[in-house]
Image (cartoon, rainbow, N blue to C red; front, side):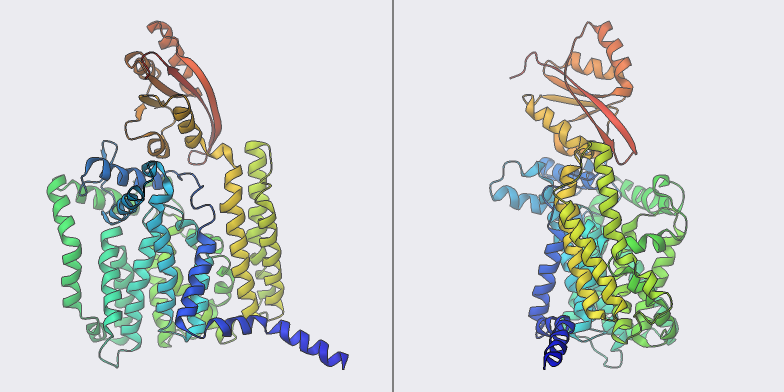
Length: 571
């Protein structure tokens, strides 16, 4: 009798993940609600407290702020510099978010980076839900849910959901397009697509172009070209109503593209195409160069916790490459991935729009019992499941100790819990309990998000240089004129104000303080010798209010900045 009870208890424990999944998948509405909650649990910790992350995020936010300051919603500018690298879509979205915040009565909305991040948060959640929708062309509800959950918990989408940039929203648009394309290909015998699929496809296509130019076209175009070659026909694309869809796309994107051509005298196209896009292909973007294979290596961190499971599924994709669902997923991934690997300029988030297809193949392989401890070296390889949270726990603790002389005590418990759960996920994999392994990975990701983004970043005060300088500017009466010498991060412009002066020499800094009766200058230690010598020549004795020291993650160097001010004439 006791043995029977023990066996039943073991059975209940073993099938708890099965029972949870069965409960969740009873309706699309329930699945989507759980996906939204899972997404928010991963995306919201630290959303409002994380400092503006140099350099791209504050550039986007500052340009959106200036749109409202100037009332010019065509020309995109960062201070006096034209920002002709990307189309206007994300700036409009961020400006709209800021307008809503101001309408709700927040007087400091323009300086609050969280409001500019709201479009990225919506884009990240939309990426998850659209991944679910796209995956329904390949699976039933359970497979689509697990695919979307892998996206909700992957590290790179957690990062992009918190950054006021284009990439989360681009991912959403890309998944919308590829989900529609998948339905056109996999149901090509039906001859017609539902209106909802067409609307999602062409809305994603038009908004994707308005947000980041030709990338959506590249993802869809390369996949369509590969599949058309495989089919020896392009007729299946006609179900997408291309002429009607292209007319809709032109109606959405053409007004701004014409307006900016007139406004900039063609400079937008020469810079966006010549400098930004072709510069990535050539040598202009030298600061982000990496060799081929970079994305393959970084994938194990960016797509955690699903990355190692995806790697185990690679032979499955090759063996079943002629099956239509697998063929589509490979056409989604491989051509664009090869383009990204071939281009010298590389950043980890570039492959984000391809990851839903990776998740689809992974879940496909798991559902057919291909992925498991029986695969060669799988038991050893899946040590990467706990390796990422353990590595972050050790690495961030070491960084906090090195930079600030303390440990991230608030975040450590959550990171340790994330590591323990990930270790348990590894044990579940070894026991071939794949569904439970996936759920453990999702829970580990939530704890890791809370630990890293919610708490650890708060304790890394040495990285918050711009925030601390801005605090000084506001604490000491809010000077009428502020300049910076040697420290030129865009986050400082965003936090201090559009009129922040960027100086190049100690002579300029001294002259700035002399010419303005109520002024403050941030002077990097490298320039202080020239600055003091020039002050002596000018008979100027500015007050050294304080020093701000820390570590600039963009330059990879420690900084020591003196805060100098003159108070005469201050209100």
